[in-house]
Length: 165
Image 1 (tube, rainbow, N blue to C red):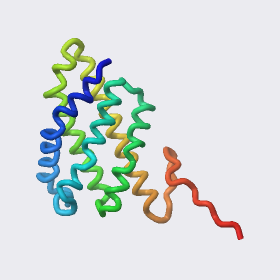
Image 2 (image 1 turned 180 degrees about the horizontal axis):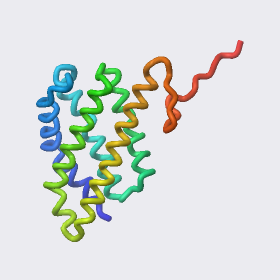
Image 3 (image 1 turned 60 degrees about the vertical axis):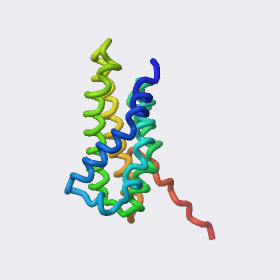
Image 4 (image 1 turned 30 degrees about the vertical axis):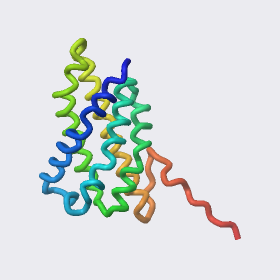
């Protein structure tokens, strides 16, 4: 399959990012607009769209989508260190997902005219991807706070080794 979603995301990166940032600034349930500069707010968007575009183009299965989300774990780490609360990260990802779904409904129809099931399939994969990004954010926050919270889905952070006397 040609790299159709990847190129669509690259072509519309700036207007998509502006539309999403407008949604974040309009949402009063977070302090992201006052906590982060515009650059800090949007710096992860190209990487997220690049990874998602690759997964959609390759028609990745659920396991590959989980791996793709795991590769973006750094986003949640950065947000943690910027002082963003976990519910604000969740809200940010929800707004990003909503903006992306609206974008796909408007722009991707041309890519999927031959088979409308392709758009439905892309939306399903994108939903899994964003769910996994939320899971990764929870894991990062849980592992960054003390005491360490055990999880089933991750070995992050790796166990600490105690020094032998």
